[in-house]
Image (cartoon, rainbow, N blue to C red):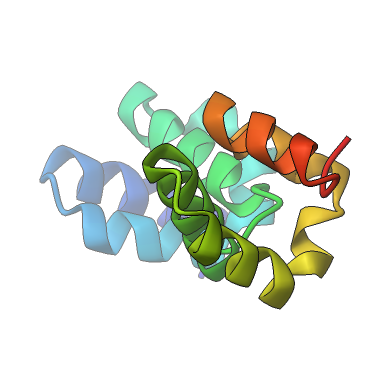
Length: 117
């Protein structure tokens, strides 16, 4: 598909509020559209920016689920469940980019357990 056809297809899909098609076009041609972003309309550019942010996320869905469960255990002060989650996912917890995703309760408990610093 030529660039002009692609830009027209994305803009038309966004005008028709066909977000599924627009997302498919954008995801399939992300690099090309990032280079020609200035030719897209504002709503298509916003979708492109959103999809770029989603793909740059350092954590996948499974890792986010683990963090959510740890935060839930910490807020309920369920130490048994928290210890089990820490034991099964220690490699995730030692990463530096994960700490901002924890709630304050989880940070305090995990620091007390010497899991994070």
